[in-house]
Amino acid sequence: MAAIIVVGTQWGDEGKGKIIDILSRQADVIARYQGGNNAGHTVVVGEEEFTFHLIPSGILHPGKKCVIGSGVVIDPQGLIEEIEELEPKGIAFAGRLFISDRAHITMPYHKVLDRVIDEKRGKGKIGTTGRGIGTTYMDKTARVGIRVCDFLDREVLKEKLEIGLSEKNDLLRRLNSHHHLDSEKKMLDEYTGYAERMKPFVTDTSFMVNEAIRNGENVLFEGAQGALLDINFGTYPYVTSSHPISGGACVGVGVGPTRIDKVVGVVKAYTTRVGGGPFPTELEGDLAETLRNAGPIGEYGRTTGRPRRCGWFDAVVVRQSAIINGLDCIAVTRLDILDRFSKIKMCVGYEYGGRTLREFPSLLKVVESCKPVYEEMDGWNEDTSGVRRFRDLPMNARRYLEKISGLAETELCMVSTGPGREQTIKVKDVWRP
Ligand code: IMO
Ligand code: MG
Image 1 (cartoon, rainbow, N blue to C red):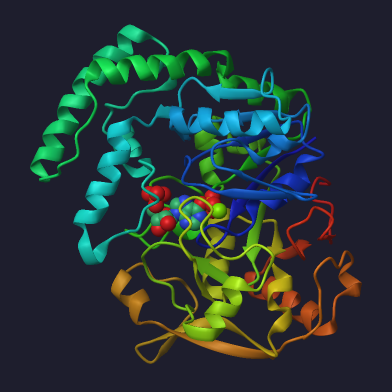
Image 2 (spheres, helix red, strand yellow):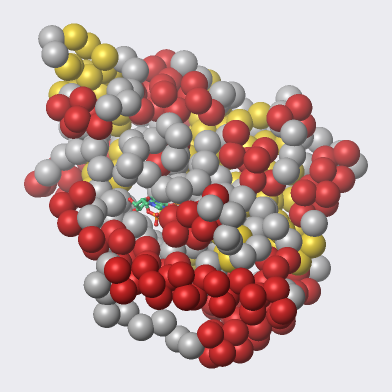
């Protein structure tokens, strides 16, 4: 038995969905611990492609229990839409989906405000997903949020909605926004409908997951976003409002750190970022276009459709991530995308003020003026898509992976060579102690 956390080590979109899907085969419980439907986790099964936003990627495996923990923020409308899209594809939810009674609810005003506030930032725009994530967490920490248990009680919901709606209308007026929110009555009716739909899934998920661990079941914690989007350790303020890092799993599901056995970091073989904020190894022009469009699944946001910014692998980012997440091993994804490059660069440090930095700086203007220090390697110019054994990879691809592992000071456990389940190299059995 084991409890394993899977985290994104960069700025999100590392391919966590695929790695979770592979590891889910041996899991009994798969739990999301933070974020909301800002996440977009893609899993390809045969010819079919699934994108999950709130539902844990483990749902594709019949019989596995999937948990949405209390650290997640839930947009009921989004959740129900997601369930309704997946049901006709043969995915069953009854007795398999468990939603924390303590998770916070995203209301329509959170979504409107998220967009209005980000627009107001002008040049400093974060480029949020507009899903009301930050504004829901704002209410949560301001202690005026609506939790799932509050949401299920019409009286409590009415009371909280009354306060919330009038406060948010005031705020929108002050922001000179022309957005008009529905009346309290209309919102209450619509959201009570969602509450009825959600009710059968709601439970004390912390209790449930702790019991699963006690019973010797295998539990997988599914992180969303990535370490550099963490509210504490990311490129603040260009971050999300939750804790994607491994510690977030304990806080977000209600499991003690003593119960965790392993942390797996998902590392993209290069770097991407969607939205605003510093990105030292970002590329422009043809190189970026090639990275963006080389694979069967291009680098476009799964939640917003925005083209992702693309750049070379950045070891400063991943090393920082290895430390704050306490990574035990790394799963490197999208290696095949680099097949067509004859030269590949890796950033091993940042040049700043005549010095070479190895740690990620905290001050934004410092990060912005850092110049990446690159090491160049010969590519392998060979098709690696679908390679299933490490020793079958071209020598330079193996060197590249070993270099990543060396720079991250973390051993390699998996490599993904394409979106399909079978396009995976298992270097180490992650479930084994
Ligand atoms: P997955 O789970 C990549 C980014 C947004 C924006 C910032 C804040 O698929 O890796 P938010 O809406 O969270 O307040 O936006 O975070 N962002 C992501 N970028 N992958 C994600 O999720 C992301 N979720 C949020 O683009 O820059
Ligand atoms: Mg994604």
